[in-house]
Amino acid sequence: MTKGIGIDFGTSNSAAAIFDGDELRLVQLESADAIIPSATYIDRALTSKTGQMAVDQYIADNTGRTVELVPEVIGETSQFVEGGGQDGAPGEVETATEKVYGAAVTDSSLQGRLFRGTKRLLGDEDVRRLMVFDHPFRLVALITPLLLRIRQSIEAEVGTVASANLGYPVNFEGRDAFSNQLALSRLGEAFGYAGVKKQHFYPEPIAAAVSFLHSNAGAQGETLLCLDFGGGTLDFCVLRRDGQNFSVVATHGIGLGGDHLDQILFRELLFPELGKGEMWRRRGFDREIETRFPFEDFEDLLVNWAVTYTLNQNRFTTPVMERIAAGGPATHKFERLRDVIKHNLSYLIFARIKTLKADLSSQQSAYLDVPEIDLRVDLSRKHFEDLIAEPLARVAQALDETVAKAGMVHSDIDIVLGTGGSSLIPAVKQLLEDRFPQRVVEHDPFTSVAAGLAIANFRGLTFQP
Image 1 (cartoon, rainbow, N blue to C red):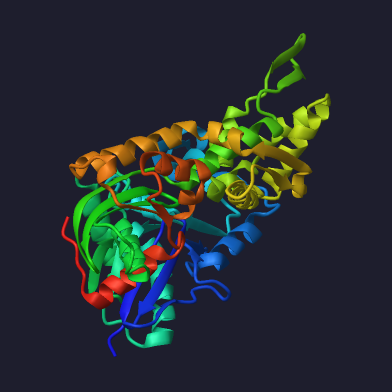
Image 2 (image 1 turned 180 degrees about the vertical axis):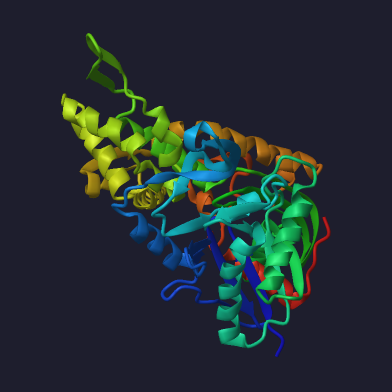
């Protein structure tokens, strides 16, 4: 029997599904989960780990490790040196060679490189290769191991993968008009290397809508709008349906995802508890100097957990330790900052932030609990919504643009479908409800895209932008 295969390679996580015309099931990609982190870890021997194993190895290899950056040789200079002969006679001319060193950029004790969120780079023409232990790796090579693992997991259940529908966002992140074409070309090449030869690319929000229509064949209404708010992108589509058949009226997408909201929460909730805004008193040549602690040097590395380990080098840890030694009422904040750096806790903190967001979806207040640094921060849903007011405004604007692009007004839409983890945020749900009262439904926020791709593959559905 022919089986439909769908693969949803996401910015943060990935999933796959199988559909045989009757049964729809998710593929077990991790030992206890159908969802796998979109991560690849490459060690010094250039062997790779993927998924949760990649994340775990990265954390283990960088916890407590002092980063030692050594100068990199970028060239050599040579000059002739005349040596002195005996009794003042001319000596032989010798060549003196000196190595030219650049900035201290090589991490001599680095065990491996972690790549997550690589999907965001696929549409960027300027990012062609990334260095991994002196070896240039194309972006395609960095995501192929994960895609290979996904294909092998599918084949363990159904045998050879003859073809698959592959999800993609309406708009990849990129700065030029050809970013989508470039990203799809790279993604197709990577899937090809992973053994998926017959490929059918299909927009992620349309796939989510296909999954909904399959599960809710009796749903009333001719026009459906889908909002897919994932980890890296926010995508929309408007469909006009006739039973199980439909036509695509409009699509739209912007580079805004749940990961952006997580970084806002880290900055607003964690930074003040790690020393941001605190003063630093230290002894100068002839007097004591009091300045604000240079926390801005730490910020970008803290909110990008895959590179937070680079803070564990002397130029960052020395001022932190000096500030701790100076004492004062804010000392405990810098002790937390020290522990975050030393024990590589940024990934763990982001995991707790995701839990906080989930808790606020079902209750009016919750707390961020990080006992590893003796920290608990209470947060109300109202305060959370205030913190993400700017991204919410962008969601509203993109939503209205999608309806206008379809040549419709809000009252023309019969069904509004929310999917993706961030679609569960009450403020996002309320934003939809305000525009489309009593027409908003939820559907399978984390796996609807993979499911819809499998159904579309089984039914031979294609899409031409």
